[in-house]
Image (cartoon, rainbow, N blue to C red; front, side, top):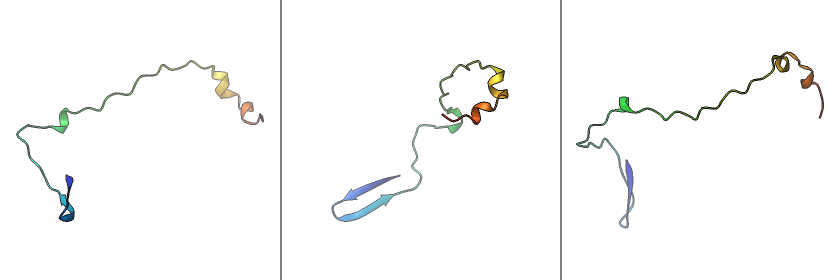
Amino acid sequence: VSEVIDPTFERLSLNGWFHSDREISLLDYADPRPPVQQQVPNEVREFEDFNHLTKSN
């Protein structure tokens, strides 16, 4: 789908299905995987202690 601008027309839009000799399959496409980030080990006490939520900076 594309738009063609011509001096004699203000707007001329082409739309529809466009075919090609090349066979295209969406089943062969796979999204690239995001980069893997290593998990940082945390102390369990950080999650058990809620006092840090009430402290003011």
